[in-house]
Length: 177
Ligand code: ZN
Image (spheres, rainbow, N blue to C red):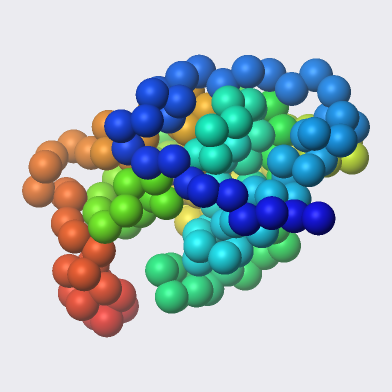
């Protein structure tokens, strides 16, 4: 049974650790962790969540883009568990877009990310997957990948002026797009 688990927040040292590789994907603890992450991200209106955000420092995240109150314009996709993920190539083009983080509540940032990335990960059935991701889904992947390296989106901002409150974001950005 999937459980809703508390999300740790900015300042918790686990968010600053390098996460560990997973060697046994079929281990029930890892499969349960995937279920807990999927339930927790759906309940929190997130579009992605990384294991370190629930204090499990493993190289695993969920990408779960779908329109919701926090991201009304997100594209729809099936929630996907990505284990031991890697970025194997990326575009030279970098685009800035708005991000938030369940571990950094109340803040949005205008973050530069590669527009297109080639990624590799192992899925929850132990199959190696390669995909090309673009735009918003590429942004989610890069944000979640950073969590495995102990990096948060606020570290990526080019200027403090690219940081605004959630309320201002909802009023000014969402309502104008
Ligand atoms: Zn995050």
